[in-house]
Length: 244
Image (cartoon, rainbow, N blue to C red; front, side, top):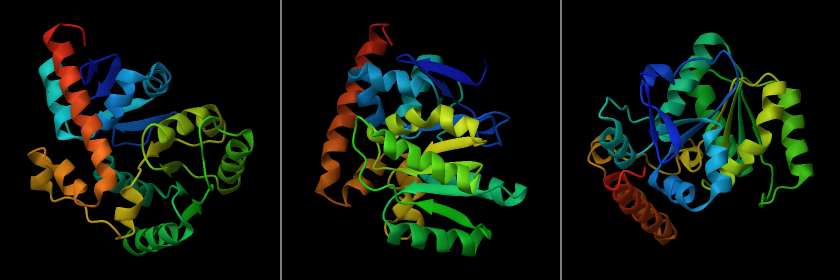
């Protein structure tokens, strides 16, 4: 397919117009950063889960790696930005939206902003503490929530990789059976929507320094930064050896 590129066993959709649209059938959407790539390179269970969804380049460095591999146009489709495109689609087409994850307070603040700016009524669920391997009760509770609210788009804010994507993967069949068209992991973007964290300026993202901006949020992000740049060098080495 013209708008696709395979990097380290993961197929990426590279064009915005192939991603920002209402799917005909259910898709799980994963916006892949260097931190996600670290887990993909290390854990086959995670890699298999990711490969069952639609993937985009979340970060500038992932975008450049895909360009290096395939030599084609690659749009950077970060979760923290394209979620607003999907909210606009929901508004234009009168679709229902749900958020799963985050605290009740953050969910309330994010919902109020979305209602104010998009006129959407957002359904929210705080699923409580989620740990891997996942309990059947937790999965059933989320699916019951979806069955009750009947959302078309479901956004998961479960703290990022690897738990978030693995949990989404465990729900895929149930979400599809309940009429969901799109699920997407948004991690800390929920805090940005709620206004608790500032989105990095576009020029910072464009030069590949969003990691530094995000690192200013606190030392807890330093581990993700270290993992990300470890993944960057590993992927570059594989590309040079023709093994990625």
